[in-house]
Image (cartoon, rainbow, N blue to C red):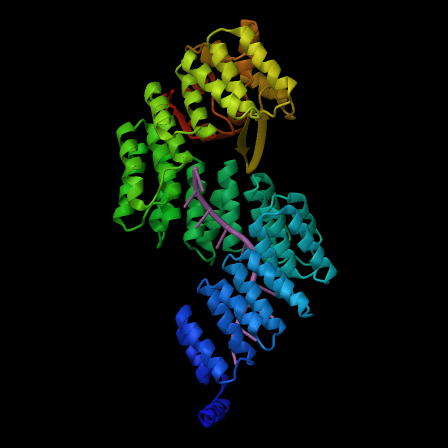
Length: 591
DNA sequence: CTAGGGTTAG
């Protein structure tokens, strides 16, 4: 036996490393844990456990197989260790989403007095960004500085990404600004940081800086920027990027394609979104969902549900996001029976309806005025307290359909469940206002102001010559405010001539009729449209992006504006699109 | 022979 072993080792020693039998066995074992254990035994029997490259490969393969504890055992029983083994373990563990074990390996590395490398930190940082712990993240940054990797371009890019994921934008920017030489990946991390944290304008601004500093961008850059364009409604820049992709040699994959679909969809151009989809060679569930959502938010519910079925026929299974997209499409289009059917089909795809799906269903019933059905749906759901978002959907429906009693009942429950959310109080006061109970409106408003609850400030954006202009209700901050107001006053006169009557009941505060009319007149979307009309030529489409829902008065006004000025106007609110043309809206007043 | 950071849908 011992002689055999000696022979074996003699033979093996003569082979080149890649031909060594142990290495071959390891390769063939792949991610199969049983086989890896056999190779491990083989290594020990043949006295090759000192061979670190083999041991490293064994341990990383074990992690790939999901056997993180086995990898730990390999490490703890290894007769010798080196920096490479540790870095490999840390990298593989972080890539395989074992963040805690990544830290375990890092601690052991220190215990063995093996100095970390920049490889160590990029992976360690990646694990911490998965943990989303602010304090721990800053501790890692401290380690990076103490060990002298503060100016390593790989580590810095990872830090930008880490701070992005935990929402520490200023720290991300500080690291980025402090880089002596910014890598492409660092630029991409910074852009993605702003995009992912709800600051699409800032993301676009960094992209501008990037172009100015002459850094060549790539496919991940553009995917992030397109996503930012989508969220801010920057169609001009989006089209510029699309053309750039067509004229340059950039890796056009399913991710970039999906980003393009979403950009066109969120800028209101479903036709182009479909065109991009049809040109893509690969369609995964994300791409399908983006297209279904495109049709859904633009009010084309029938097309959305047809695509949903086509997707399944083509062999792609819907996931939870797909169901949200298709159910909300049903809600926007009033496809009640289809919505019910699709909800029931979730189980077949291994999906369980969650709060977001329930919200879609309640919204669907609620929009259609089926308030009792919506209420019953909620009551049938749980034995315990339903999620607040479900009640909010019902409450919005109560407001829309002026159901006073149910509305007050729902709002009471909602406020009891989430007393810190200002939105609930506003909805409740709206319900009181609709019922003319002004003293209650005042009471609720006093609560909101008295406790300093944060309320969402509504705004509208209009893009003129690749520049976004922001307006809030009653805004006077725009440099051209005087001209805008004059144009707007004239615009109101013009639509009054064709039958516009200000819907003062949209004002949820008690004030004089005249004041109500003026308050309505300076709603942010009217300001944005007046500015847009005055700055663009006849025949061009106007696009407005809002962060809250359009009110009934503005909806009526914009219909008439589209008629009088012979303009197509697309308004995107936080939930869907309204395409105004020739005096009517694509939503057919169902929203 | 064994290791890096950034990208898409709600």
